[in-house]
Image (cartoon, rainbow, N blue to C red; front, side, top):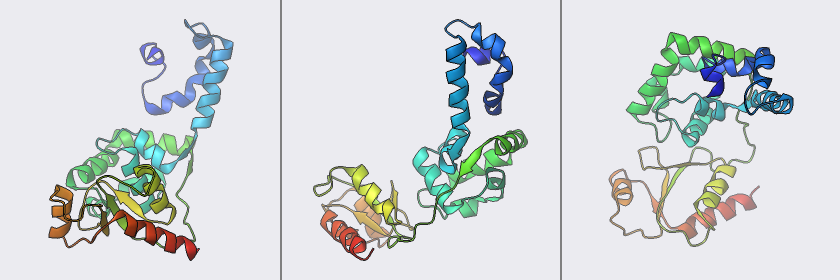
Amino acid sequence: EKFVADGMIHSLTDIFYLEKYQDKIVEMEGFGEKSYDNLIESIEKAKQIPLANLLYSLGIKGIGLSMAKLIAEKYPYPIIKMQEITEEDLLQVDGIGEVLAKSFVRYFADKNNQEQLKNLDALLIVSYPEKKEHQPFAGLTFVITGTLNTFDNRNQCKDMIESLGGKVAGSVSKNTSYLVNNDITSQSSKNKKAKELSVPIIEEATLAQMIEEANEKA
């Protein structure tokens, strides 16, 4: 906030040019040479960033980190090529509907944003999602709901699915492969949606067995 108020930062890319204000920064209240050095070191580290984190940092309405990861995995493009992605393309990503797709495309169509992205592309060292050799769950999307008994928590379950190449979404759609729910007869909205779309509903134990079998084949 201090840097914005003092006119040093007007846009996202300005953060990476704070070095030219060294004399001014070290004289600011709460700063000194050491604080300045730590700041510049942090900025240098921030130049190395995964594509998903970069997409998330752009502040596109509705695009959180988990959604950014899904987009990055589906379309691991350089940031300046993201404007080529269409709404139709984005609708192929599980969990993205028309509103989010429009928001994403609108951001990358904006001329001012395009200029900022060109600058970022020249400054940043972006890492892209790696293709894993062992991906028995590749192409599968799981939705997890209800209480879990076998896994320690939902994050552990999610991590294990993703380690095998699968994806975990927050809502049931036509792209969902399995809904994981220990109460298969539940009248929850997710169960109803899964039945409407003929999405298989499996118990946690079945998922655990699928993961075990997949790991045995590794």
